[in-house]
Amino acid sequence: MSLYTLVVIAVFAAVPAAIAAVLVAVIAKSEQPLSRGASLTVVSALGVIGGVASAAAFLTWEVGFTRYPNGSIEGPYGFWQLVGTALCAAGVCAFATARARHIWAGALAAAASTTLAYALTWAIIASTKDSTGLFLVGMIGVMIGGGFALSCVATLVALIRSARRPAVPR
Image (cartoon, rainbow, N blue to C red):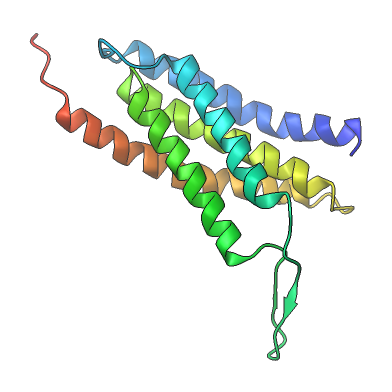
């Protein structure tokens, strides 16, 4: 993998990361934090570590391509690898969201950091096997699809947490 490839991957991730950071900061300022819980930095670090680990654990090796009699081709990852990596990423995102001091800002920080770390890891893995450069299109797809799915997970956890939170007297 060349330095150019790494720079291109970083540029494709920098804009969504900057947007997410600004949104997390704005939401955190407008939100009353809980008396205990993890800071947004810790929540983001959990998301990054979990995103990298879930992608690396399942997607750094392939089971190969399978050609079926009807002409369809499946691969390079097995179905169980995709389910496993998705469940791991969702679990990490839910855990980080549940530990956050800021309910809504923490949810966004967990979803964004897990998504970006997962997408970057996937792009690095995919770029080693792709000579066309189309892995960047895949990275954008992973960021959009994974971001949506992990945002749904984080929102569900945040809704459960906010429903359990006692009302703050005014």
